[in-house]
Amino acid sequence: MSLANLTKPWAPMSYGFLDASAKRELRRKMIKAVCVPGCQMPYASREVPMARGWGTGGLQVSLTLINPAMRVKVIDQGADDSVNAASIRRFLARVSGAPTTLDTLDADLIQSRHRIPEEILREDQVLVLQVPNPEPLRSVQPNMSIARQMHGDADYGRMWLQLYEQIVRSGRVMQGASYPSMVNGRHVMTPSPIPRWDVPKLHMARHLTILSAGREKRIFAVPPYTRVEPLVFDDVPYRVEDHGGLTCYRSGATGFFMNEIPQGDGTSTYEVSDSEYGVKAIRARDGEVVAMGETWYKDGKMPQ
Amino acid sequence: MTLTLDPPRIVKTAPLVQVRGVSKSYGRVVALRDVAATVYPGEVLGIVGESGSGKSTLLRMMNLEETPDTGSYTLDLPDVDGNLFALDRFARRMLCATRIGIVYQNPHLGLLMKHSSSGNVAERLLVAGERRFAVLREKAKDALAASEFPLERLDAPPIELSGGMQQRVQLAKAIALEPALLLLDEPTTGLDVSVQALVLDTLKRLQRDRRITMVIVSHDLGVIRTLADRVMVMRRGEVVEAGLADQIFQDPQHAYTQQLVHAKL
Ligand SMILES: Nc1ncnc2c1ncn2[C@@H]1O[C@H](COP(=O)(O)OP(=O)(O)OP(=O)(O)O)[C@@H](O)[C@H]1O
Ligand SMILES: [Mg+2]
Figure 1: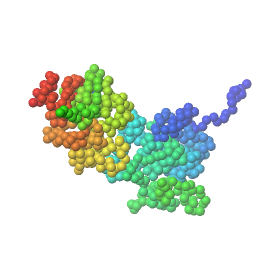
Figure 2: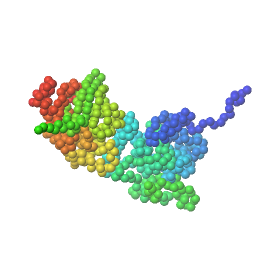
Figure 3: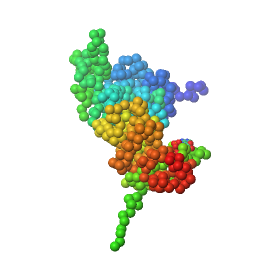
Figure 4: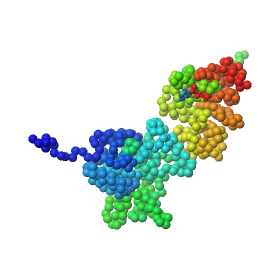
């Protein structure tokens, strides 16, 4: 009798880097977050081989959701090829065996920092957003215990006052990214630092969005078909960035969120911020047959 | 021939505010001992008393900022029932924001010093659910005008304003939602005599035009005499004497009140 007879032959039994109990906790917190849309759920943020602040919150959610049959896409500010996005994508693939993709249409799981892809996400897709600062009330209430009480009471007068002050001082709402938004008519959340351009994409979206802050240890979610309304006064309309009329100098695509590229002569050119969408547009222009998904914005406008 | 006299207004109407049996201790300090107060609609109740007699504490309770150890508090308003001290935090906040206005002795307690003055007033309206910018601005302006605040300073932050103007911003904030009850804690203390007179004028005019029910706390008998219909005298957490203003000033009964009135004259 040898040891080999007494033990089972080797077989893979787990994937996703985190241990089973960590994943179970995260799953429970995600379910809670889905049940109360926009409400921040505390969780025990685990160590992952990455520094806090580099997307550890999003990574833990991805590691929990991932399975070897899922296709993963990771973007950073819209780009698949930035160092941070590439490292996270490679890490996810390595610890789970999941295939990776750059194409939004092919992805089952999309982890993103600061952007939502331009192509409409489907019911079977999950978007994971990395959140540096999950508390929208931080700027008006530095004491986090009181802030939690204010969420409990739906006491958002100070948030509105902040908008009032911005209009009085500057003539318009100055808030750019992380525009505070009311979820399901109850909780105000920060949609992570996505541009104002991307916030309307969350409203009544078909896909599930999970937002996770690793350093602050908070998870919140926007379930499919949930209202997400940016805080605006009835008579001061919400405005997205003026990118609707810009054209990408590489792909010729018009009407999407752009990266500005300053030129030597003081002018600027623009390129599509959703890099893979830009790549697909170029390939389509060059005569390849490419599946271009339907986009949220049409001719630079979000249909109502 | 029988002569029928109309009973005085006060006898016909039910009191708006009834505070009964309120006691409060902070550790070994008894701030209030079995205090009762009644205020009728449209009336001004003055509270005088020495420093530390519990006047501000009573006012904080009436603004539902604190709950006493014992006692009850009712407001006779439609859809406001029962002992207000028993309300939960949420209900208390809504009631406070929409039905009660307060002016603190220290403007730092009542104002956001770095926000605009109009914003301070608008906050009240925002809490009450107003979501139109133009309306917010108009109503804030109206309230500031009613408290005779110089409108060219509309968007100046209170920290840059004089003490008298800060009190006017507090007052505007307090009256912005037309509260049923206005609480004033030493609204003129710390102001020089001429500014004091101006603020008193404003309060008097508000009282006359809008018939707001007020409770005003002051240790200055002159202020109380100018504004109050009835007066309550407090000492060491207890009410020692209460009655019509004239009666208290002309014919004080309690030794402490006598001393107070004499000291003034
Ligand atoms: N939060 C508190 N903690 C401890 N003691 C308190 C507190 N608030 C009030 N007190 C005490 O209660 C008593 C009444 O205080 P209060 O501020 O009501 O007096 P006041 O009549 O308003 O005096 P003043 O005319 O000086 O403003 C004082 O002895 C005070 O020290
Ligand atoms: Mg006091």
